[in-house]
Amino acid sequence: MKKPIPLQTLIRNVLIVIILLALILVPRPAAGYLDLAEAEALDIGHVKFLDVAPYYALAAERISWRPDLYEQAGSDYFNGHDYKTAIQFYSLAQQQHALSSDGWLAWGQAFFFQKDAPGAIAVWKKALKQENPDPYVHLYLGEGYENIGNYTGAEQEFEAFLVVYPNSYQGHYQLGLLYAASKPDQALPELMRAAQLNPTQDPPVESLRSALNTAFLSDDRAYQLVVSGQALGALGNWDLAAEAFLNAISLGADYAEAWAWLGEAKQQLGQDGSADIERAIQLNPDSAMVESLYSLYLERQKQPRQALAAMQKAAALEPQNPGWQMALGGAFEQTDDLVSALEYYQNATELSPNNATFWRALAEFSLRNNLDLAGTGLPAARKLVELANKDWQADDIAGQILLDTNDPVGAEALLKKAVQLDPSQAAPYLHLGLLYMETGDRAAAFSNLNQTKILDPDGPNGWQASRLLAQYFP
Image (cartoon, rainbow, N blue to C red; front, top):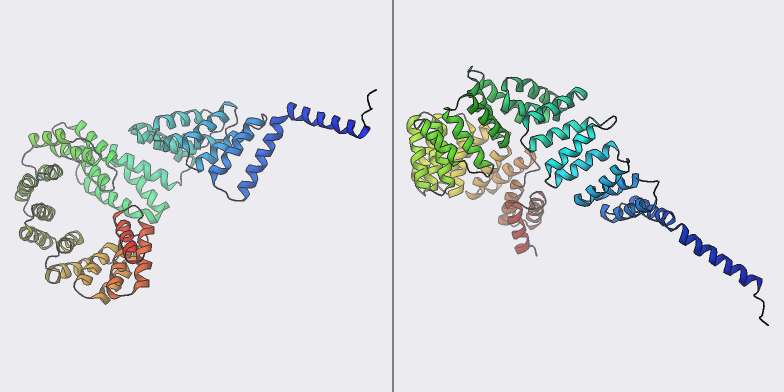
């Protein structure tokens, strides 16, 4: 006869069965809430985004009534710069109709940061079709269109954004740049409004405004576009500059200077501009501007002698143009004829004695080649500081020359001034570090070299500072 099972054991067995049934029947939501609790705890502890994201992802899969967690997982992957995975989770949130307006913006950005502008544009276009879309979609979409060269589309989106946010500096500035490439007469009001909204950004606006005012001295619209394109190029916006030159050519296919500048813009963008340069020379071989741009092209092709000949022709066509004299100095420098180079750099300063650009070129030439620093470089640097007393680069150049001419006290004062004028620049810190190494102040040398490395970790100044730190401060 079997011995009866004790009541306590029976109760315990029943409880075990109940627990097992619970684990079988409701594992996912329970586990999901554990994942969610872990994610939220990690969030409070400021753990790295990519450590938190998997917990939100698991919670989203296990708690079917919380599809918003897909977006949270996407946001953490996005903030952790794993854009590919972020795209997947934003897509899952959208499929569950749980994507917020911020999520739509970030989903497109994830594509954009993956260098997939068409994918970003497709997302943002869908975002505009949602109920009460975020107006910032227009701003992002405008940037997307600009990235793929759809400048008309970009203008329309920035215009739409400014209807909602009329006091946006970024909107007015971007629209002003686009107008400068297509309709310069409409660019100035946008740029001026941008400068009013954000005075700290006035320098690029001022350079464009100055160029446009020069352009409007002529009624020739093609000329206005070329001058505007040059200003855009000077700001580094070579894609828009190329668009301006193309628009100028559309108004007159025989405009040699526009073809030459188009070739220059293409080269700046890493493209082959040789056909455009050659077209310009065929159209007007007696244009100083065309010859000077042709000289730049030849220099890039490692043909210094031919480049020199082209620049000599440009200077001969316009002998009173200090810009050509300076460029001719550079061309002679490329051929190692430093005596002739010095003569032309000096010619430029004589033709335009109150222009800091030419004194800078002369001082840098002397410093770069260690040529007559005391007799040429130092006077040029002093004149440069006088003309550009709020430019950190002027003080940095002068400080280096003083250091090389055995005046460490004067050099230190100027280099410190350069740092004060723009603390974000690495070069003056590097030169201060070198100065202190020469004067034996190891603590100051280490501090300035380390700051150089922080400000320019992947650049030439940072690289030099890193080498010095490794060699002298192991």
